[in-house]
Image 1 (tube, rainbow, N blue to C red):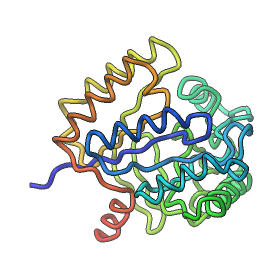
Image 2: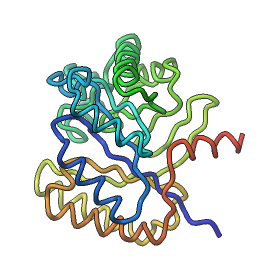
Image 3: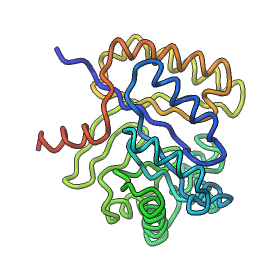
Image 4: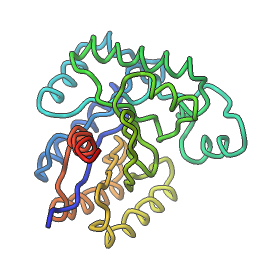
Length: 250
């Protein structure tokens, strides 16, 4: 019987987080996992631009050449708009710290940022992103239409992997940790621990690792516990593997 699969990814890949990203990659390698997908932000918080940071882009190219997949993770990873509607305002407040960049954009603006971000990644790194994952998995309907128009192969929500063309949705639980405050850290740890007994029942599990996860001892321990268990129970796969498999089922 085939083992359930797990998709490992490192979010917020940007110059300010170089050291924790290196630590995460080292941990995954030590535990025997293949290189994870890297979710790269082209112009993180508008303070840095990959085109002007040769040392960081050299490190990033090395990780990609070693087998990591490249995924576009927003454009600036910063929400400078006012979300419309109560639900979106609640999402922006409680699911992210002002970083839900694609939650309230118009289709034209979302498409502009996606295409510009993709061009920065391709011209700087020499690799084409395989898909798009919005910061905090928050994207409005207009942004979804922009993703579908952009030519990228897939995007994610909190609950699904979404292949763009041909359209296909795969149910997928995602485990990640919230590190902004101690109560959030312990609550997210409790959630991830509660999922452990049911992991084998998820055909495609996602583990989304953020740089701060490795910096706090309690979330680092939770991450190591989860990864150690997954190394025995799951087969780590690439996003391209999932795309190929979903195509074969059509």
